[in-house]
Image 1 (cartoon, one colour):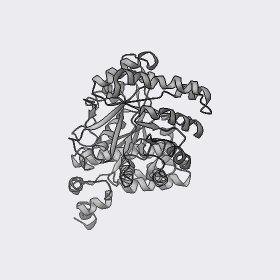
Image 2: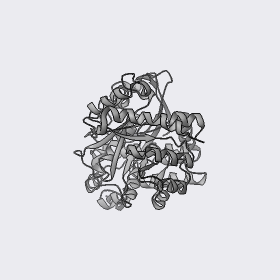
Image 3: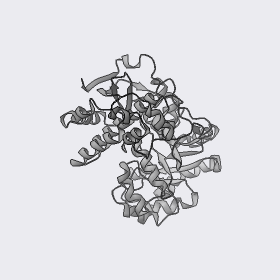
Image 4: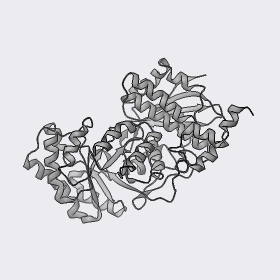
Length: 426
């Protein structure tokens, strides 16, 4: 065995490949015995517009990294799949995909840094960041399969951790056809009966969209607050309420809304403002005792650093298919923990985002909630996977299988609705 192979076969080699920030001691030991791998092909998997599941189309895409050992890692990102697929194709022109072919997929940190720095040359973000996130998730999936360990264990997590979820509810993501305006009480009682401890919905979006976030009257406030009152009248304190605002509002309106919500002791206020001015969030934060959530719209630890340093919010939320992948999600949570700030995971995307988030949630020690969407994990995701993580008594657990633990349903990739395209290969 030459020196290069020897280093790769030791824990020291594993440290060099992965860095010390994420990989557990169990993971390092497993990686020390991993075979050398190279990436031989990169594929994207998109879905026909004709594919409808649980009444909705598919808004995500998969990225698959093939290796010379026959191991395939799968990542995911969303939405605007044509843009994301084009960004991955553009990797070839910019030598990203070309540089990935023939490299070791376990060199997760080096791959991330190389692509991130090249992106930074022409402004980081958007489709390029989504592409990098998908690549990173696929690499972690490969690492787990090679080491024969589930991802949560590679990250030092516990399968016995009860990962607390809230349920996001919109009329397009409904349960039993129930609509918020007509069936608020039924929805609340159903979630309580399921053991789910919290709901997130958007009581101020209707007026926000009508007024373009420029102004909210006292009458509009009172009408919006009925959405809060009805849930609390129906189930009392058995269901906490988080409010999502989709960054619609200007600062004075956001302050007025936050003050109006104070007596209702809601769980959090998510993304009231756009994410580009943390000092505006500082001003908002000084006006309310309700915890602010910022933001699934931020990417990488660098994007969250300013938020933490400014004391702009009490809760950090990220989306693993947008923020830079599993590597960045772990770093963001660890950085938040140094400020005693909890983290949440946005999961209103595709099924692999759900798997990846549940695995990481089992490993972070400053978890507040993981977002869940009942019709997704209950009805939609089983179309693709045989072992979709299910919520029981308000909690979820990751699959105890290598990597992400994805068990694709038989014949899935033979379906005509799946559009598989080779981006690079040899």
